[in-house]
Image 1: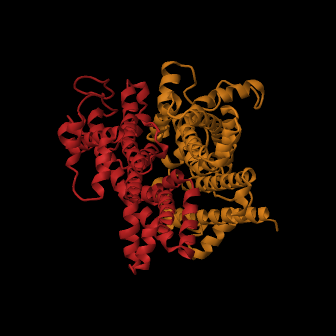
Image 2: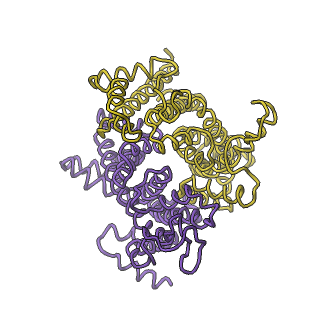
Image 3: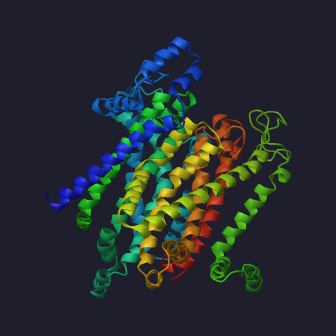
Amino acid sequence: MSAYGRFLLRRAVYAVITFFIALVMIFIIPRLVAVNPVDIIAASQQLPPSAIRQLTVEFGLNKPVYVQFLLYLKNVILTFPPNLGFSYEYYPISVWKLISISLPWTLFLVGTSVAISAFLGTMMGLYAGMNRGGILDRMMSYAAMTTQSLPYFWIAIVLQILLAVVLRVFPIGGAISITDVSPPYSLPWIQDVVYHALLPMITIVIATTPVYSIIMRNTLVDIVREDYMVAAEAKGLKKSTLYNTYGLRNGILPVVSLIAVHFGYVVGGALLVEIVFSYPGVGTLLFNAILSHDYPLIQGIFFILAITVIGANFIADVIYSYIDPRIRYT
Amino acid sequence: MTESRSRFARLFHTEAGTDTVLLRLLHSKSGLVGIFILAALSAVALLSSFIAPYSPYAIVASPYLPPSQSHLLGTDGLGRDIFSQMIYGTRLSLEIGFVSAVGITVIGTVVGVVSGFAGSYVDEALMRFVDVMLVIPSIAFMIFVATIMGPGVVSVLTVIIVFGWPPLSRMIRSQTLSIKRRGFVESAVVSGSPRYYTLFRVILPNMTSLIVANAMLAVIYAIIADASLAFIGLASTNSYSWGSVLYNAQIEGAIYHNGMLWITLPGVAIAITGIAMTLIARAFGDITDPRFSTEGR
């Protein structure tokens, strides 16, 4: 097998192991804290004893723990779509169904925002690194300090008040207008969706762009000292050529790896931003699930989030190794 | 100005080794501003029962009053004074921030130093575990665990610490690896120092400012995490932090009840704390590694 193949295989094995550990945590944590899901449901829904007994059997809680674990693995891994049980709040709709409706909204929000802020951040970092100590460099450093010091759903609240409540430029929340009757994926529908997604996206872009730009800038500070940069400069290359080709191509690597490391954080923040804007993604679903103690739904959401983030990290690893061949041999 | 500042700094001339860092921290503009803000916030937290005009839990006026002389930030849906809630919130938020930061710093440092120093399979095992923790979406898992443990300060502290230490341990590990190869550590090993001595008396003191700087950042991470958990309804309901004030403002629809200040100020308070912590951390960082400074070259 080639070195590249071995590299990919190793990353895939890591991803699978990580996913397995996440599964074990989802299974074990509720049992560690000695919480019986049936008790929770019984307390919140005031069930009669017969129903409690039936639920205990249905959850398999009368079986030994290792049997429960194997059953759980069979349900979530060997079954497709994964059998995550039924929501209490929206019974008889299955957890998988609820998540498969809301997950695309979250992925749309996060994917688009991360793409925009990675692009903006890289460009701004490049410019700031070229002009160290300049206005943009200083402003960026303060912007990064401020956005990193804020819970980023708070930016969402402020934008909502300013732009949706006071100025009325954007809708207060939701993903599509209630009055919108145009068929899905038609032009007016797409316009409406983008219009509703703008505020949540702007929030995520504001919160994450400075992080990417700082990494880009600090990488450049290191790169400028490299021999090949000194040689290129001595050769008489224009400053713009020097940075836009030599600097950008080498400086972008840490940004790519940051996108991967950062992805879980961005998704986590996006969940809270969704709550602010009542955006019908996984975050709002989770919020309602917590409010109504919808235990299987909460567990199902973590299962899906773990898969999504671990999968995204694996993809980022593959992309990273594609643009930086050195990594394949380490 | 310089005279009075250095006089202030001289107060910290205690032990050799640590005084120079503290001195330079007070001499740097950002360090001084950060320490000043932190001192002011701590004063509010310690004196909250004297500063707050009302009890944060007492119903003292009619609901949803706009800001006025007697209620600086207005009242909430039950007629409780929001300004007093913010003042008391300062105490709980800072407590959660600093307690978690201590936990995170201790665990992160010990794991990082041991991993870097021991090497081989210990290192491999610890770092693979850290990798897993880093990939798992932490806020989401915090919410999951806090839901199961039930709302309250203990579960909030637990999840913040459990998910907070892994990034720090990575950083400390790589620093340990680089220090390990330097001459003075090798001399210590060759001259027969016991392992724990090399680890905690030779290697660790050389990372003090890195550790302190990251402890400062851990405080703000913890305050933000607490606010996020509170915002989703997982804070303790019988005490106020900035996050729970924000949560109340959100679920009681503050923006429709003259509550602009109510809903914005908790975030401002968190941001101010965060900026103070970042300034201090950055001043520490600039002292030890001046390469990335924006203050001239």
